[in-house]
Image 1 (cartoon, rainbow, N blue to C red):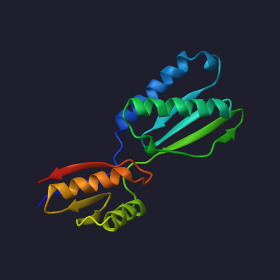
Image 2: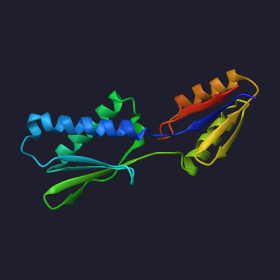
Image 3: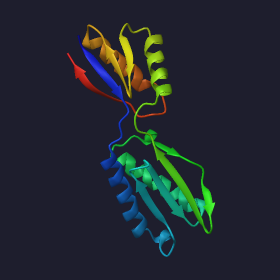
Length: 162
């Protein structure tokens, strides 16, 4: 019986490359010359930290980071920017990385599949959703339906079996 898994996985090495490319761009930009601007990634905490002298610069660095995510084909929905906080003379913004499906999002996706009217069986299995049916075509319909929806997390479809 054909099946597929719906997951939300973040390729951390691609995120690392995007952050490194942003660091290189910061070093070469004229408007950041002589400024205290930095961007760091913490793989352990799954977050990116931007530190600048003003909130405008922080927004520019975040925009550069989004641009590099796009170039590396990492979905921007994986970024969860927190509020900017002032710390001394610097402005710090922490950006949390969304990795994996939390139970609330998995329930929303499962409910959307059932309400779509497509006759498939779907079940939540930890941080993924397994969808099964007798025909591949219906699984592809589910994939097309979910690509149109917005759940706030990047979705990938893997483990497609016949």
